[in-house]
Image (cartoon, rainbow, N blue to C red; front, top):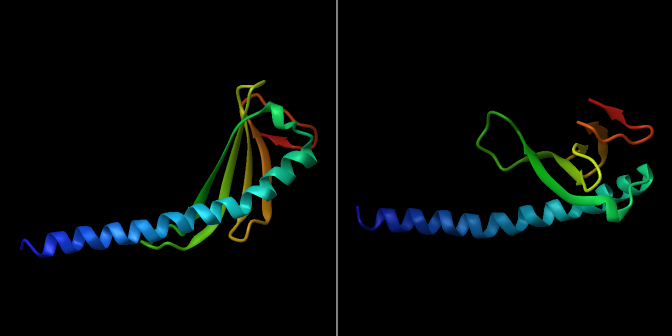
Length: 109
């Protein structure tokens, strides 16, 4: 029993060590598209408080398959945020405002 637990812990640590940098690299690969969208909308870099990008995974399965990305942008000058939804290669599928931020040509929910 003593040998099984350390091996399981070691295996989990190795998986995490190899998967996390890969996930971070994928997220950073779509950041330029998020920044391009912000530029197209006319958002100034100085207005952006934070850009968060999260991977979407296939639901109902214990898998590492990424089906797309959700970017959420918060701002210094409004309480809401802008959402950018992308597919697995970073192509933009949807852009919309949430809760108090308004941008010309972008839908609000």
